[in-house]
Length: 244
Ligand code: 6PG
Image (cartoon, rainbow, N blue to C red; front, side, top):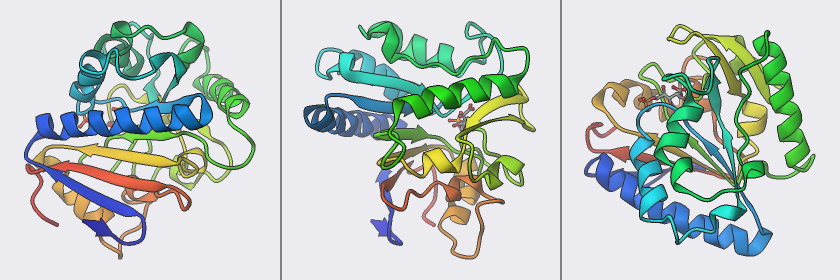
């Protein structure tokens, strides 16, 4: 099903089927882009939904995907040490990266050791701007989740970060634990070539309905604001979410 001009919805029986299908799709996408460009830039999501997808990529596709050409970034990070149980970097390392042979220079974690989170955000932005061209696409693929109130990455409803139009990375305080976060913003997310939202769980139903409701705005449902004008967005949704 295709909604609007650039939001496609793909529905699956459950998270297992969704994750297996997304893994195969990502396999094809990476292979195609690496043949064309010689590298692939992937922004990983935190949270629990993508964990199974990461595990499948790291096992079933361990030897199929040219992982040495893939550069790993993060869409957001909790401002905790990378070995902390709440770290998105730690989750991705345990579920995926530890299973792969990837050059250390291809892994671009969001730093969390600066005294001021704002300095960490600035440092990451410098890395991103050094990696991508000044114009054109940024990430080849961004993986995102969505909270039940419509946040994505660490862009939460009514946050000033949702209004950011220049900086690619900002430090935020959110109403969730851990509260200090670093998040990518719309200026860099909306230059991605492809965005996949991975959504599972009935608690996301209300927020999904807001995303596809033409009368709502991104400030109240930040996931809605990720919609690259020159890219494509696919919503991978399992059947725990009723039709909308
Ligand atoms: C984070 C994620 C966040 C996540 C959503 C959904 O750092 O927590 O980036 O945006 O994707 O909260 O999380 P679940 O997949 O666990 O529902």
